Structure formats: C-alpha cells, structure tokens
Length: 270
Image 1 (cartoon, rainbow, N blue to C red):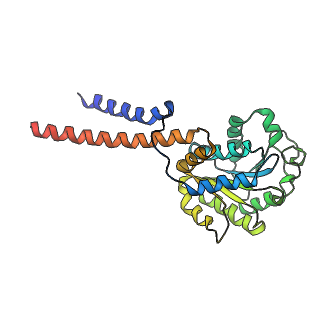
Image 2 (cartoon, rainbow, N blue to C red):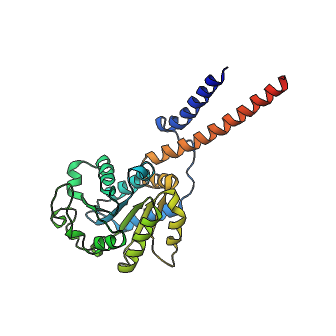
C-alpha cells in the first residue's frame, strides 16, 4: 500500500471517529463529575420561576461560539423551562448577534417577543457593566427598536436589583472578572452564576469559594455542559461533542499502536 493511500485511510478513520458519535447518539463515555455545575443547577431552580426576570450577559463572539454555545444552551433551556424572562446584555460587539442566533434556535418568535429583551452592545467593559447594572431600562431593545422599558421582558426591571440572578456566559477571563468585580461592588447579594469556556475554569473556580460568595455556580467547557444536560434530563449537543473528542483520542492511540506494530513487523522481515 502506497504512502498516499495509507495517509488517506488514516485521515478517513480519524474523521469517522470524530463524527460518528455526533450521528449515532450512543452513551459511549460516562460524564465526569462536575459539582460546580450541579450547584448552578440548584441555584437556578431556587432563584427562578414563572415570569421571574434574569439578566444574561453574552460575553463571547462567533469565533468562540462552537464551544460556548454548547455551554450556554442547557443553561438557557433551564431558564426558559422555568418560565423566566431574559434580559440579554453584552459588552462584546458580537455578543448580541450570537445571543440572537442561539435564542432563535431555542425559542419561537412569539415566545421571544414576550420573554426576551436583547439590549444590544454596551461599550466600556467595567464602566459599561455598571451602566447595565444601574439602568438597563434606559436602553433600546434591538429587535423591536422599542425603548427597553416598553417591552414585556423588561416589565418591572429598572436596575439589576430587580432581577433574580445574573448569568454570565464568558469565553475570556477578563470578561468574567469584570462582571464578578462590578456586580460584587454594587450588588453583593445578587446571585451570580457563570458558564465559561474550559480555558476560563482556572480563573473562575476561586470565585466559587463560599468565603467570597462571588459565584453561586459554574458550568465550564464540554464536561460541565454535559453534566448540566444530564441534570436537566434532556439530551444535548455537548454530550455528542464530548463523545467525539473521546472517540477521536482513542482512535489516535489505536492508530499509533497499529503503526508501531506494523513498523516492528516490517523491521523483523528485513
């Protein structure tokens, strides 16, 4: 077998191991424990309910959406199942569009018009967050063009003190840090939870310390998202992606072992 054919076969096998679990939803791997995700689930159960307003900060863009949408989706599903109203904010220019795309996939247009207010992009990071915390009703809802205060989702919401919880969905450490610091400064008793990329987890974990009380729950990366999906009792894409990664790693190990055996066998023949 020529080198070109061998490389083609190896490439096809790797692609098969990556995409097969996405097509065939088999529980190939058990989900590692994610206690912080379990805590977040319970925090949402306790803080939310029908018609309860929740502020959701989308702090990621299209380049990070492949991972972050998997993290955000089960959290948003949970909030929607609880009947909550969502006040969507962002200090990233791409954040409102990413939020709109994901929420469009999860809700009908009629449901979004009643339960979601997308307040668009707020520049300024730390100072911008303070503006969002102190006067979200002063903004414009980007889908309708109406003043935020006139939308159903913003009914009774004038400051962050009027929401039951803030959910931060962050792909970068600085975005999470800014929300934790600014919320702790002006609303220390307001529950704050986060869904973050795997790379942000080392920064986010210390905020879970009961002594600080800065984060009341955390979902990080595909492992955390898969654990949250299991808590929610709904199958989701995070588990498929996690299985794909696991199968791909096993496939690479198997190919390395096979290559080593072929090399050894060839050496003996020579």
